[in-house]
Amino acid sequence: MNSNFKKSILLPAFLLMISCSSPAGNDNTTVLIKTTLGEIKIKLYDETPLHRDNFIKLINSEVYEGISFHRVIKDFMIQAGDPATKKASSKALPDSLNTYTIPAEFRKQYFHKRGALAAAREGNNVNPEMKSSGTQFYIVQGVKYSDSDLNLAEQRINSNIKQGLFNNLIKATSDSVKLSPKPLSDSEIQEIASMKMFSYLTNNPDYKISEEQSNVYKTIGGVPRLDGTYTVFGEVIEGIEIVDRIASVSTDSNDKPVNDIKILKIKIVRN
Image 1 (cartoon, rainbow, N blue to C red):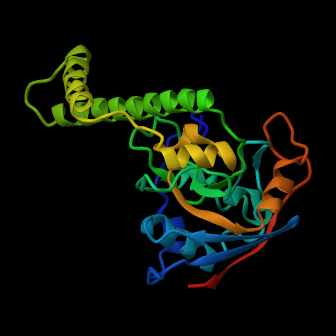
Image 2 (tube, rainbow, N blue to C red; image 1 turned 180 degrees about the vertical axis):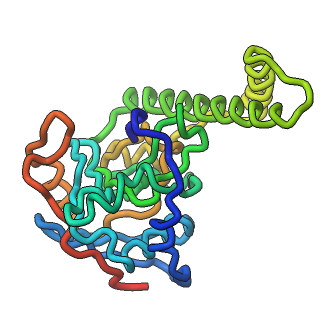
């Protein structure tokens, strides 16, 4: 989520730790997260199988037990999943945004409503494909929105989508010309990417917040500006008040809670 993080790298040893056989997908896999401030129950979506199965693997490998919520912003979200916050393992496991990634699984029906579970990621400038962090996740607290707020959020969503797409086109074009016997200048690469971008914009409508989403954001709340650019793969079904409690704690200038809030235990309670 912070574009200043370093570029992601693949760490085979860490991947090996969680690469046990993928669990069979079942409807409404439910996860119980026991924190130092209470319990949160989450339903994982079967329509985002890569994120669901990865989350289950991490739970079964006990990667999350003992880690802290390291980034908390009231009226926005609470974030955890960085193995480096598990003090006993901090030297062995680096920040999870520097380990491995998962391909984005954007689904129109799943959006950043209050209680949504989503995957953190690096910014578009180093991650144009909007791939998710292998381990970091966040739970949305959010606020309620007005119609004018939603219009602004929609503009931001489209700007983020287009920025990510254009960065991806630049990268893809640059990689392609490396295989060509005739080198191209940066301006020529930019021109080719711009033509592809124009073609995309001509044939694809802008992202629109649906009436259903709009009603949810106005009555329940959330963070609509992240829709279409961060993968939502589950939702809170019990314990939203615990999310509120965590989101309300005192934090330092880096949005880190002054007093550690840890995940004591996380387990699958129904598959």
